[in-house]
Image (cartoon, rainbow, N blue to C red; front, side, top):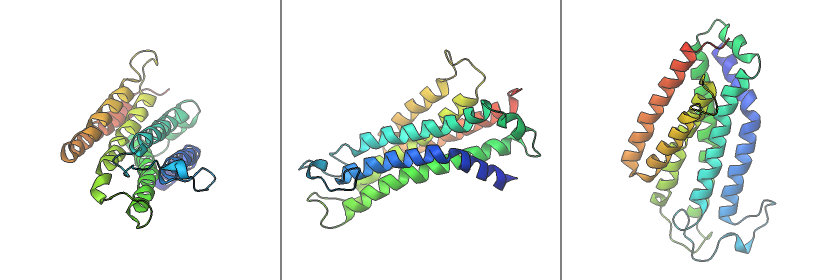
Amino acid sequence: MTSALTLKELRESAGVAALGLAGLGLVALTAIGFSPLGMVISSGRPSGTIPFLYDSFGGQFALAAGALAIALGLKQSLGDLWGDSQLFLLHRPVSRRAVYLTKIVVGLSLYLVLAGLAVAIYAIWAASSGTHASPFAWSMTVPVWMTWLAVGLVYLGALLSGIRPAAWVGTRLMPLATACTLATIAANLPPVWGLAVALVAGASFVALILFVAETRDFA
């Protein structure tokens, strides 16, 4: 049953994942200096910019990764609630906890892999010899990797907002707003503290998602 749930979530999230991959890929290729059509453009990287430190990749990546995280979280939650899938799933011989843990594992894995791929592409290019005239050390990528990790909270906040039994014009979006705030804080703290905030907040969001899933009347 778990494998069937996993395949269901992957299938239903495929469209959002494809759009997210396209957006993140565009961010990485633009930072490298390629046009969307794959042609090298001389204006793609202004002279004097240093990868990961003094360029626009970090900000553009955060926006694209955040959009993907929100889209995945809402798709996995509202996609079932707006159709008949929710009641069908909850009447299967599997617990609600298992259903929503599967959603979280699939959604968070999709986000981390797709967003991480964009950072890896840019980092490998920046580390390759002859690609740019700026200094580079792998430690320069740490702030962006922290953003990558912290934005995972945004996914969890979106998923929780999607399943909460509250009015949209009110408190339903509070988990998403809180997640965005915590993600911003975690991404801008020193790495050790940022990691601690991300892990504690992430565990709290997962616990809240499971609590709502197990106690809400979806009928």
